[in-house]
Length: 310
Image 1 (cartoon, rainbow, N blue to C red):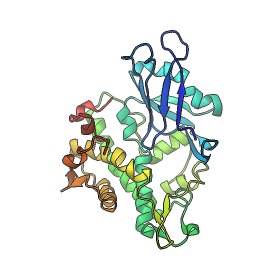
Image 2 (cartoon, rainbow, N blue to C red; image 1 turned 180 degrees about the horizontal axis):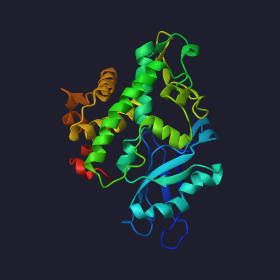
Image 3 (cartoon, one colour; image 1 turned 90 degrees about the horizontal axis):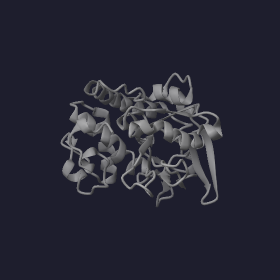
Image 4 (cartoon, one colour; image 1 turned 180 degrees about the vertical axis):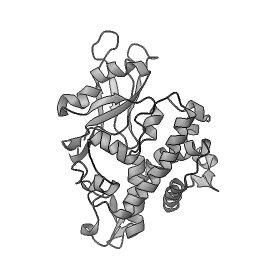
């Protein structure tokens, strides 16, 4: 699996100088163009969904690519650098190799933050597994595949979570009417766009996915020999504080009630001994005790919801 790659490109002469990027759980954030010449010239961009699903087969030697998206979306700032970045980088990780997956530009980073991504899919599925199995299985063979064996309980959890996100998305569109937010989409709409699919419901979209079929549920062997849901994996450590909680903050600032988002956060924080929510609100004192604890805007000094677009 490609985790971190370095390439070289110079904006001033068209030759390669330096790009560093890494793929992470919330979305892919790529930084640092041409810092060898102009330390003030930085192009920041994020990919809404990782262009292809991949896993390590043998660490340091071999990786497996389970397939690519039909459509990819990225946000870039400054906005007018998208075409150049597409030419020198995006095409190299999509259409050059896979002959599909052309990149399209989102109007804002917020558009990607509030689209359906890991921060909705992973917690929704984990909560469904907890509700159905209490997050525990007798043998390794009993553990369902994370996507291929997606069930009605998990599908309903994801639907309710996405429904709360849609309330927040609608409030954002109303607050910023000058932006089109073309790619700030609900789960099924985004899935049909990026995968060119015709799935009728959430459960089928996962069960029919060739890309996701072999991905296992993150578990750990317990002292009694059974297997439990790994609540220390990135589905909890990343997708809650750097995903769902961000949507919760935006909703709170825009006056949107998000009961199922709250339910997910409260469930996860009780399991892990955390305290992101308190008395129906985000506990800023707790969240800001460590600047790396969460990804909510106040952790970066942004307290005004009108300043979160880019």
